[in-house]
Amino acid sequence: MEKELSPHIERLREVLHRTGLSRSTLYLRIANGEFPKPMSLGGRSVGWLASDVTQWIESLKGDKNDH
Image (cartoon, rainbow, N blue to C red; front, side, top):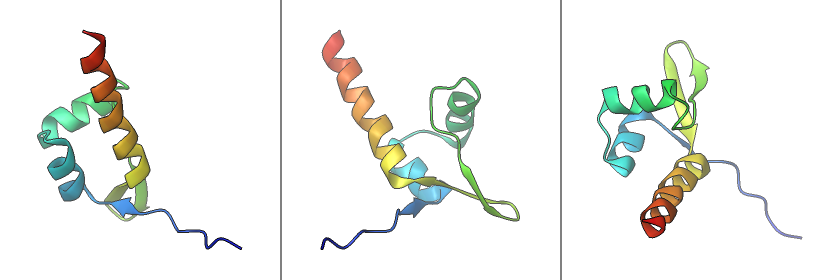
């Protein structure tokens, strides 16, 4: 039986570091549907599934190969 890993949640600072985006650009892309929406972690805290961020980064590599 394989052990199932729980999803890793990344906070804003980590997402900004991984993507290289500024906070304002990140939220602009979210508003335009170009980046995954964050999930509420309670209060004013939000986070993203690490797998969603990784998938978005991988999609950029695909876009680069299309040009």
